[in-house]
Image 1: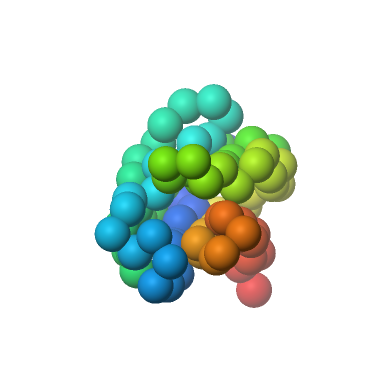
Image 2: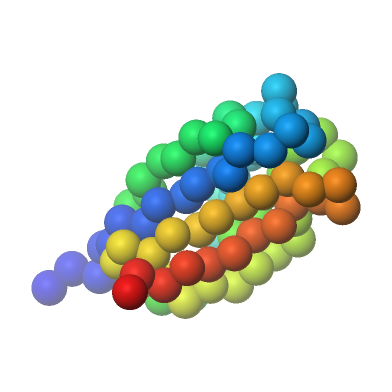
Length: 90
C-alpha cells in the first residue's frame, strides 16, 4: 500500500496582488506557482508537511499540516499577507 496522496492547492481570487504569482513551498522545496484564481493538484506522502506561500515581500509563515488524500490547501492574499487554511476531505 502506498502512502502517496493527492492534495489540491487553491489560490482564491482576490484583488490584492492579483498580477503576482504565489510561489508554493512544501518541506523547504518549491513545488509550483499559482496565479490568481488557479488550482493545482500535488502528489506527496500522507502525514505532516511544512507549507508556506510567498510573493515579493509577502510570506505566509510556515504552517504544519497533517495531510490526507483529497485534502485542500487554500491560500488567499489579503492586506496583511497570505492566509493559509487546510481543509480536510469530508
